[in-house]
Image (cartoon, rainbow, N blue to C red):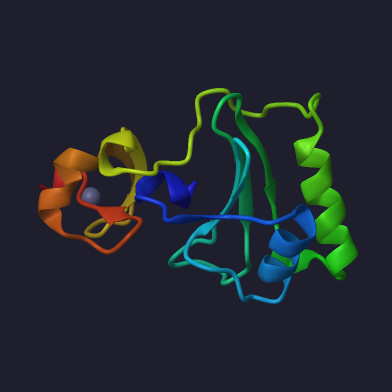
Length: 143
Ligand SMILES: [Zn+2]
């Protein structure tokens, strides 16, 4: 989840329709929007396919859903998926995930080694010194 690896700049949203439209038309601001405790955040891979992925995270309950907006054919579809996430009984897929909003919120990140290409996990604070592009770091073997 790429949003976990950075400090996210989140704008207050007006409604589900407004947020869905912004993502669907590729005109969203900064990293995404909040509606109450729920954040809709751009989670596209910085290096990957270029398909827009939006993670929906309740900052109280945890991660609710990951929606591939890039695969939705209509705006109504995106609105419908987003609405499902806002239902009070929407299932939580990961209780431990929150959207980092300041540097100290970033605890543990999933990275790809910029040297050998292997995926690994490390603390954001420890990896900062390697000054790699977003999503990359240097694994223990390559240090
Ligand atoms: Zn490596």
